[in-house]
Structures are given as structure tokens and as C-alpha cells.
Image (cartoon, rainbow, N blue to C red; front, side, top):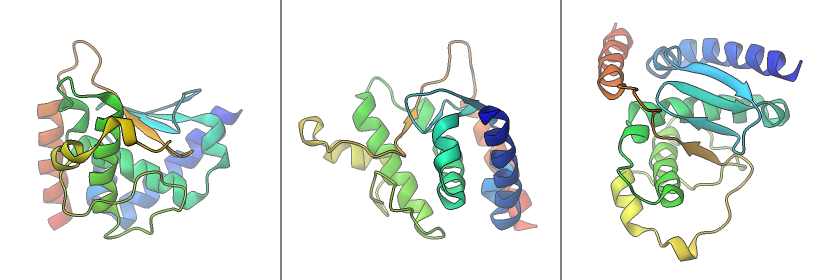
Length: 171
């Protein structure tokens, strides 16, 4: 029941995103939505957006839509494909800082979002400045950026999707 309800809410959220922000909404349509029981509120691997059902029900509409757009931007910035053996926790935080910096331009950042925006800093710049031993605990909206599963070749597909979304947004 919870899974069905969260899937319905996320379908509405994708439709709203498509109308409000066509570029991000177009890219959101390329992610499979998987709702279940996960350690994080949301995770993305370049093919799917994984949403924790219990947290999905507890989130406000703003938080849910923010997480959806947040996951899409991770894919658009190719974060799942670029970790290259770097520390997962630091990579997740640096990627979140980059995405939140972008989203802060057009979205109110929910207070429950764990990573402050790092407007103007790339994931690589943020990563270089992080100290693993000095990281604060992450909040309830912490997400993860999983590398693609074995055999997935998606990076070039995302580049093509971005080109198409840019063309659609310009029309």
C-alpha cells in the first residue's frame, strides 16, 4: 500500500516538474522509479531513482519534489559515473553540495536537506576540500549516488538525453 501511494505521489511530482522546469522534468522521465525500503531517503545510479517508501510518505511535497530534482541533477552532472574510486561518503557530500548550489537558484532548499549549497563549486572542488574525519552526521534526507550496476553503459545516454532536453527547453 505504501509503495503504491509513494509511486502515485512521485508520478504527480514528475508531471509537476515537467511543467515547472521542462529541462529537469524531461530528464526525470528517463529515470525508472523504484520504491522500497532503503537506508537513504533517495539514491540514484544513473538508471533508476530509488525512493524509501516510509520516508516518502513522511516528506512534504516540497521535500519530495526537491529530492526528485536533486536526483535528476546528479545524473545530469554524471555523478554516478565519475566517482572513480574516491571515498563514497565524501563523494556523496561533494556531489550534494554541487547539486544544491544549482537547485538553490530556483528552489527553496528545505531545512531538512543535509548538505549546504556550494554555489559555483564543482563536485571535484568540493571533494578536494572535504576532511573525512571532520564530517558531521547527515540528516534524514541524506541520499546516495551509487555507481551504475555492472554492464550498464549509461554515461553517453545521459549526454544524449541532456542534448535533447536542452533542445526541448529552448523551444
